[in-house]
Length: 176
Image (cartoon, rainbow, N blue to C red):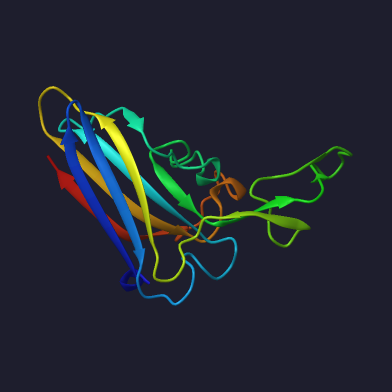
C-alpha cells in the first residue's frame, strides 16, 4: 500500500509565516483511499517545530477531525482526515439499563445509518491542503508530515488502542 500513495511536502517562508502545502496522490490503487471496511480511515498530520522542539502556532489551514481521537493528541491538530463518514438514522441505548438514546460519530456502518460525506481520495486523484504557521524570529524550523492509515476510528476505541492500530503510509520532513 505504501507504493500506491505519494506524499509531497512543499514549504516556503512568506514574511513572518511558514507556508506548507501537502499533496497526497493516490497513484496506484485503482480505488478510493482508504478503502475496504468503512471503519478504515486515514489522517494527514502536519507538525511545525522550532529547533528546540517547541510547536509553532498554526495560523491557517485545516485541523484533524474529532474522530482522530484525543489519546494521541491528533484531534484538532494541524492536518486532515480521510474517511467515509456515516450519521445515525436513530439513537441507540447509552447503557444497558438506560432508556436514553444517543448517537456516536461517526456512526458505525452496521447500524441504520446514512452516509454524511466521503472525504476519501479517488484513484488517480491528488488531494492538496495548505497550512500556515508563525515563523520564529530566529532559529531553524522543522516541518514534518505523516500520512497514517487506521483500522478503525479512534473515537470508537478511545483509551483501548490495540497493537497495530495505525500504520504510517508515508512521511516527509523539511527543515528551514
